[in-house]
Length: 373
Ligand SMILES: Cc1ncc(COP(=O)(O)O)c(C=O)c1O
Image (cartoon, rainbow, N blue to C red; front, side):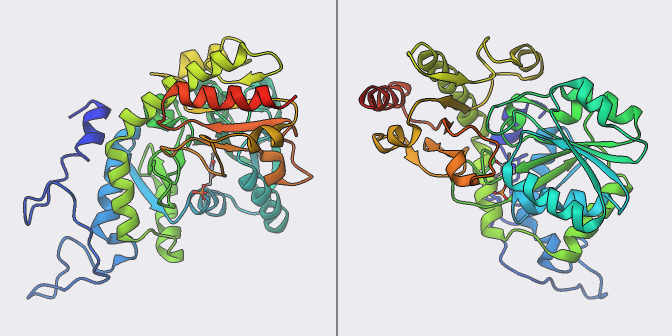
């Protein structure tokens, strides 16, 4: 079972050995009995990090990313912050993306100030900028690709080489690429992070995060320890929803990416609409995206228009809401959400393409753009 579609669809052939059930059961128990010799059964003592339902989700995700192991967390933020808090000590230096998920950038700036870390927020698609930022004390390079909300694409293999030469680890937030389009570990990254709330869950009904590692090394053992100690785990029902979502990952994401590419091309042909999508030749990082991303360019795009909030008010199919990666298409004015200090241009609308018909999505946007003078 080597092809990722098969791994996902069968959840790694997760047939319950006790009953033959072809859907992994939701295990609600928080604790596990010992056997007659007072030994643990299957090394399982307590549900904080040994509940079998999340463990199945971790195995599936590790296989999809081609990693040695995975850990699921209570949210994407819990997964991401665990990396910085566990692997960086006061005095260390971090290279982080200037363009990327706004809340993580804000948290990292505050955490670094308190914890005595040096951080450079650099434009990671520009390799010279990454090279110039690296220092002997750099412990971690963090990359998000494609990156919110301009969908900047960073060359993972090239940054991995730079990080490796500098003695730093590379972690990649691959939330928007998903394992369908990019496998960062095969390109040289040490860790992959996902907000599993997005495409992995895929139905806007579960909050979860994940880390996947290339090697079960000391750093990974420390990360597992952090999660064990701090307890930012998901419950069995959330794990079940995540597993269920991952079974259709390829069908959903490939379709979302096809629709996103079609919409990006059609919207770019409209007067007064500036489209940012890595699948378009006009995107500044299209060449890297075409080399690095397989099977498409993702379901996220942004448009810049006059009067963006007036456009949103005239939409009927697109739902004005935050988040991304679900089956329903969402549109968001990031500048309003991020506040006055936001680096996101005020005329930008972020689009998360769902599974609706392409024509319904396009017609809705076209009529709204037409009705806003
Ligand atoms: C790219 C990216 N990374 C991380 C996160 C944080 O994930 P969560 O909301 O699951 O904590 C998000 C959430 O929007 C995201 O879009």
